[in-house]
Length: 157
Image (cartoon, rainbow, N blue to C red; front, side, top):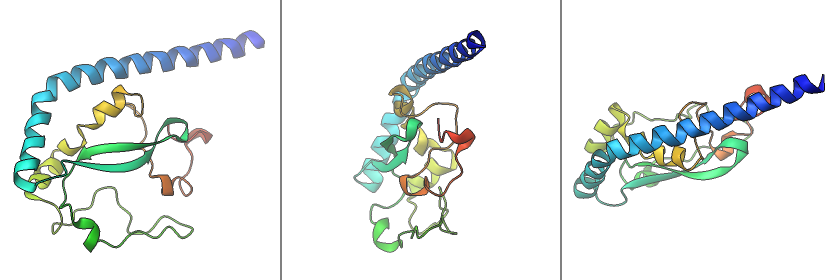
């Protein structure tokens, strides 16, 4: 029985190692290939919408570790003045969404970025650093982790 458990554990370690190697290799190649596009998007946001270029948000990654996720900014930088904050009083808010289609706060550049999910491209840097994986569940917000069902009893991996 000990041999079977050890073999399963070894298989899991090998699978995680292969997944990590694939993440590093693919994210490196993708970042290298899209780097001109990343520069163009950053310049467009800077010239047409101003600073900041990136939107930062806390997320919960593997082993429940919090980190700051970066995306290209697609909304006006004064959106926090108009938008009510979610209240997390014992449940996930009913109007909680990952991507809002609210047209009044989305910039013209942001509309295009969101349509083609180009605002997500900087996340390949997080894959390279091991904070995210190319394949896996959507990462949680720190406040939402108390209200979501854990996957296989382990949370996001």
